[in-house]
Length: 112
Length: 114
Image (cartoon, rainbow over all chains, first blue to last red; front, side):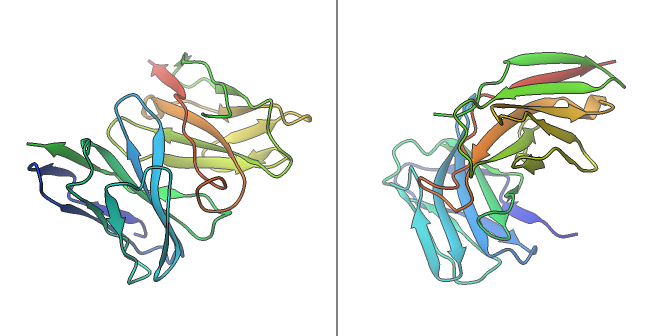
């Protein structure tokens, strides 16, 4: 079935470590997005990519980095510069900017 | 901040229609109304969206008032699996930043009861 796959479902990070969250889609969508959700809160946009080899900062990009080397993949790295990384991370994709975004099931990141 | 206002919570009896209201009095002419829902610990699920006309798909119907300042999501025959937080979002087309950002507010927690 077509969809968006995020892995791992749960991730633990030690202080000072960088960790990378995976997001893969087989929907042939051009656009991909990363959001962060904190408990009881809405989603906040971290980065988005309209097309391969291009990406833009969202509202809370500091401490994060992304790459878009393939259409189907948009990994997110949470760097040690992100001081409050504990959150639920959601990846989404859409056919274009005007089309609905479809989400994966998320990765829950915690600090050890 | 979210551009929409929704009730914090609602109950609905199983098998009945669930009508979820949303106010978006400052909506612009080029902004669409989107509905998503989120079941605990899962990613949001797209339900439906519209600009001016009422829309229907296999999941729900969307009724938008003529002045576009409010809308109602209708789940025609609610089941226990429809228990979730429902988000009403207005956005223009585009990708992120000042345009196209999916701004999720607090949403409405719908509880479908047997």
